[in-house]
Image (cartoon, rainbow, N blue to C red; front, side):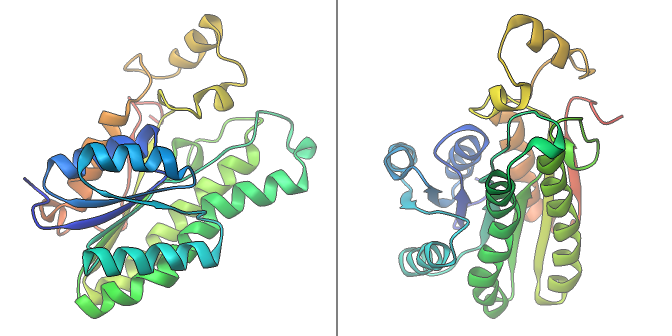
Length: 246
């Protein structure tokens, strides 16, 4: 029970890495707000783990404000915030990505971190403690061609993590990131462009441990970084990538 009596918000928690993190946090004693744009799917996960479901568009200021208000009303405080919600564009030459698609990727992957900080950091400052975890990507430090603007959004997230860590440390708030390699999540097909045995084999050949990541892999790292065991760890972007970035 490494998160006993802790409260947490996990965005994008209705599926993939977010659902894995929400389940692990709940199993370790946390009361979790399962936040997702798909509110019905969020409710299914919340019902399973005894959490609180909340629909949210993480790119909308009003929606994130409502999430913060609900969480603080229902939980009393927020000890842990996991910015997991994310999207990508399909692989394509950088100049062929449309403006609307670019804006959406940056809004969900980058602006969301600004918005959750805007609405939840004040309460963490008042409490004198907190842990924020941003789910970035190996793409932010080892970019692949044809995913240019997704790569850039995750690089932004890593830099934001370090900047937040420096500024918030005097307030007792730790900020870290995880850089997962592609995993068995709903976004996998989008990263690869197409999901065939040949494409999978080519992708896996770039990962020394020889497999995709799983929600359980990411949840284990998230649990450590958000628990008191990592009380001296801040500003880290931990690679959970099977050696991909070596």
